[in-house]
Image 1: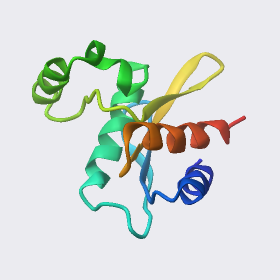
Image 2: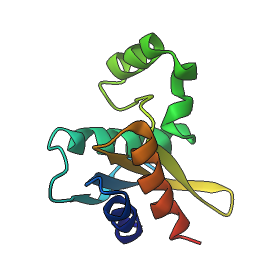
Image 3: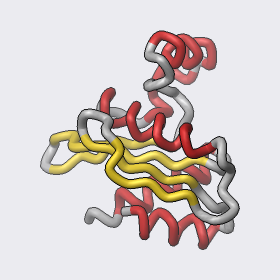
Length: 121
């Protein structure tokens, strides 16, 4: 998954921080590509955790309301975010983890994370 996400990041010219977590939100794999923003590491991990624990893309959290996103983040000690770029990993209808990407725009992050998901087939 990370290889496919990195390939997409290279294709669009946006180095990324990429994270994969299990269903409980525990980090399984992480990579920070050369040139990716250092502060984006924690954001990528939070996106992956959010998607895994809430069973939906991060962009669907809080109905797109920035204030709701801030409340989610504050009340969950930063574990839940509504910043797009995090997706649940679903196999046979069951969420088994999450993937998150960060360092570009929401659309760039989402494209890289979705490329990682597509690698699962």
